[in-house]
Image: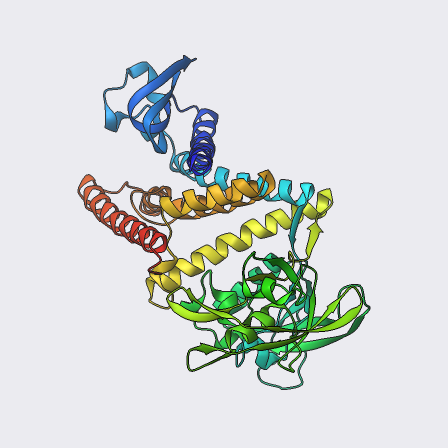
Length: 469
């Protein structure tokens, strides 16, 4: 809990400071007098004046603001009228406003680049047996297949037409999930270049191409469970006993850590996930059935019989033999050079921004579920989880939230930076500012919309915590 709270505070603090610093630096560059730079709202806990600006830390840390000299907020000395924000040309006011979101997007580029340069261990895109009847099984993916590259399929009109798209290398499960999400949201199919591995330590089989019909996935189904929805269960792991629980059926039958299961009731399990499924299915009218196992131990083949016990697993009685199956998933070090790392960071920031806007658009028109909206509780949870994994993972998470904050603030809502840009666009086109009457109306509407979005996000947070989603 302490890690989660600290990681969340650091996340909000860094993103708010960078965002407001963008406004501040642009204001100073445009010779606008900045009266206060505040991190947080409400009662001032700490303050320090530097030059003509008061820097403060306030009690409520969920945001911040830069207060500039402005005739609309109080009397301005005649000698300083030229430094009032409202007296500046439209283009300068627009620069000051847009600088905050741009600072968040630039921060994301720097953070993504840092992750690319430092390198991170990610799960290798080597998958276990897919779910029966799923999209990936229909595509022909099998246990032990590693996804090497993907390509958007454009062959719609002509069956034999070339897609014209370049193959993109898949280095990790995260890479594949990203390509998968983009294809599903755009209603595109993916071509997969895969390689079959017979077993760890043995030479791989030749490459082959598969067509994954991701266009059949509903946009409403594009969420954190997308991989499971298309049938990918978990990374590949050998059907080997990794842990034997004391006093359980497996120990009583003589199973040991390191035993490789060759057959279970005459059927060869393709991987650890498949073996677990076969054990769960070994029952007759709610009663467990004896399992005849053929195992390999230290180069010798042995036969073992195990009588499972029925255990309550998430409200369902299932057979268990009380072992841990499969070892840790295979990992790969993903690292890039300076130029490629920076280039990929820029591309990733752009892609995440476009994807975020597209998801918001689809939620607005009802094509995507509003369950995808997340609030402070989910952010705090993910901040804690990523921090526990290490600083590289936390920086990657920070980059993602920074992009989201930048994109959110550019939305054309009156209470956001994007709303102010719409005002300035109107003023630039018509030559006159938006009237006070309309400003008040739009402000009220913007506040109402933001309250609805925040309420939905908080509801989704609570629903995730209690397992309702």
